[in-house]
Image (cartoon, rainbow, N blue to C red; front, top):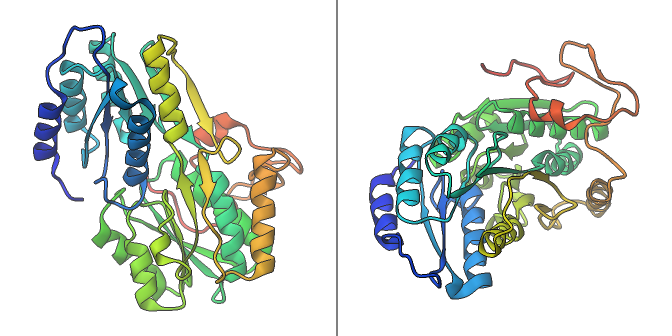
Length: 358
């Protein structure tokens, strides 16, 4: 991962300036990013939402961001400096920022914090997450139809519930339309590292995968698939449309802007309260990018129907009968998964080979 933290932090703090006391000062909003704003995926979309906040509120807000902040002690330092320099609200945008966020929030009770994809909250800390597994179900449906080798590759970032949910959802829906499908999973142990992501994609291609899904943030897997030829991919977190119509045939798009605008507005008008939200396709936080002409028309139509049924609540991606990997029953026929189980998901469903790393 590129590390420009020191320079980026210094620039951000200088830009943020010292706290001022005038009542008409703008609301100051900080953003802590795990990757660079040009990653083409996760961080790119968070920064698009930051820009949407600026566009919505104009001079009434002042935003600052620090990119490529490692998940660890350095994150706590960056958050502390933002709070010391007058932040009213700080968005911390990666799972590994959860404990640093809680630690810093305890020291700055007058600053509001919003943490992405975690589960801990406090009087001045909210959590927000997206139901990415809904989009993975749609991707799996398409992938199961497209594969000719019956081998689908999946690049995992870290073995946390959010990622495991996506693997399971994609597998179940690929298997539903193609009983012969097999998943091969490579764990990259990074959110953003183009070289490592490209290597993972090439390993999967060498193992026979002709469709690759990813839960990492760069476009490197798209480029690797394009170079290999006849390998399908899906955009992650942003549309990655520069690789359409092939190899990128659709995408999951994270749309944070409405939530960010709502929460900044709540700070501005004094109505901000602690919350813990988990939104999906229905609320627009998870979007399905254009399905290209590389996908047969009937598959596109069935994928869009699946998307719409998830959105209107008539279908849940985890609907039984579903067994755990060891063959034990998880969900009975017609039963749907509860959020508590999904948020702690630490098991593969039946049919996926291999172990989830500790």
